[in-house]
Amino acid sequence: MVVAHPLKSRLLGLILTTALVACSPNSIADDGVWPKVRSPIAQDAEIEAKIDSLLAQMSVEQKVGQMIQAEIKSISPDDAAEYHIGSILNGGGSWPTDKADGPLGAWLSMANLFYGASMDTGDDRLAIPILWGTDAVHGHNNVVGATIFPHNIGLGAANNPDLMRDIGTVTAREVAVTGIDWTFAPTVAVARDARWGRTYESYSEKPNIVANLSKEFVVGLQGHPALDNFLSEQKIIATAKHFIGDGGTANGKDQGETTLTEQELFDIHGQGYVTTLGVGAQTVMASFNSWNGEKLHGSKYMLTDVLKGQMGFDGLVVGDWNGHAQIEGCTNASCPQAINAGVDLIMVPEDWKAFSQNTISQVKAGDIPMSRVDDAVRRILRVKYRAGMFDSGKPSEHALASRAKLLGHADHRAIARQAVSESLVLLKNDGVLPINPNSRILVAGSGADNPALQSGGWTVTWQGRHIETRALNPRKYYKGHTTIADGIRDAAASAGGETLAKPDPDTRPDVAIIVFGETPYAEFEGDLANLDFDLLDNEDFKLMQSLKSDGVPVVAVFLTGRPRGVDAAIDLADAFVTAWLPGSEGAGVADVLIAAPDGSPRQNFKGKLPFSWPANGVSSTDNEDVKYKVGYGLTY
Image (cartoon, rainbow, N blue to C red; front, side):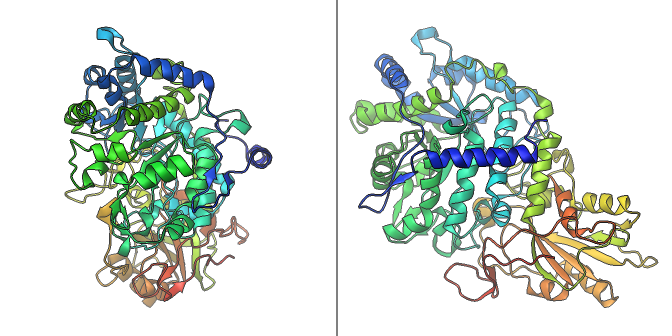
């Protein structure tokens, strides 16, 4: 077994809970808005001495190099060595080869090449291991064959902290297989307007749900000193993102303006940082949005005074994709303001060479104080030392490296399937659910047998589809996925039932399950003016209408990254289930919808709405006109 037996998992949860309670509290109250967070990771005098020694040997060029993160498509290992680059990333839909389904070993081979370059001491270079980051936001989602978990909105509906820790554990294992050290997760955004294109990356509009689930996910990713596994060989570095207020922008506009008092900012958007830093999250990503008119990448008050000063964060702050360029007076290639504000590691995917040259000149001219540079490099080196990167050897020598059988392992998929079944929210049931498996069941609709639709954005590619043509990713990219139709077919077949893939005028079904939903999207591409879901010309809805007119009971299963205005479908259907974006284990839907042979439920509905459901096409926490409130969800 790769992952703990459920009983062992529950025991682990009990042990961890007891251990954390025995430790110091996460935060220490003070007289200001922002509490001091007591991280369980104390500074180590030996590590700090090693950092002192390295800093004393480093030139300006070497220090600036450590502060730059470049995208793998725009930099070679030789470049990384020459410019002393401290970090690389693969963006969404970026792979070591030219195609997503290239050989798995290509990830490890590239990791080895960059590592080797960073440890080459020729030409008076210093051996400092390069740090690779990736957007493993619902599993190792850039890698074909990985276990893909429900997006965060579904996990918020499940609201199971123990399960979140298991998901973090599995994600860390599968990322480690490819030799990568760091994920840009969890997103601790508290989405307050579901028109925002990143709503599905938020666990809930409720800060306490976000805080509790993101904390457990970080423990799963990184481990914890109380469990004696902090950043052990099966763990990776976590990122709390995006600091701060990304989910509170006006009208849900991505990268827009969040207008709140400082107390409101903390009360709503700060709770996830108290909990994740309180269990030792080692990195924080700065946010694209503005707070009261100031871009967060340029906010010295928030990044330095609040996060590093008042909250006591001693890890590294990483920028988002060219986020520094949105500061007034900055470009992709130059931004002393972001460094002076407190961004330690600048994510400059393509223009990194010009950025390096400009920053070196700015340091030498005094526009960026050497004390700020030394602080940034110290934080970067501190995280690398804590992660054991100076001692762990090349990526192919790591404990889980190249263990291809771990990627999408059956035990991992079982945890993802549990997450799917627990995330489903039943909005309506007029007695048609659960479905007797010994029935003739029509399973149709655009999402029934469609792994791209059920996985959504940030899966294999950035948008979950081709950006220009909007064509869905090819099915071959979803290796090992089970669709919703797969699960229903299996459940029915095991009990002697029958499934139909499309309507047949000569064969009347006993019940129809119609799966429909949103086309995949990510970030600003998914921003909406309103939440109305167009049913007028929707072929899936027309099919529901036709079936109902023939007297066939209809179960509607909605695949979505947020609540949408689908009143006509809810009213028409005999049962309406929100399945969110379930990921690779679509069969988990059947575990709840299809009854046992004796007609009793195999599993009950557990999911509750993590967001209010709109009644008028606009959903925000300021809108009292809702169809269903947060926490709504029927059971059998």
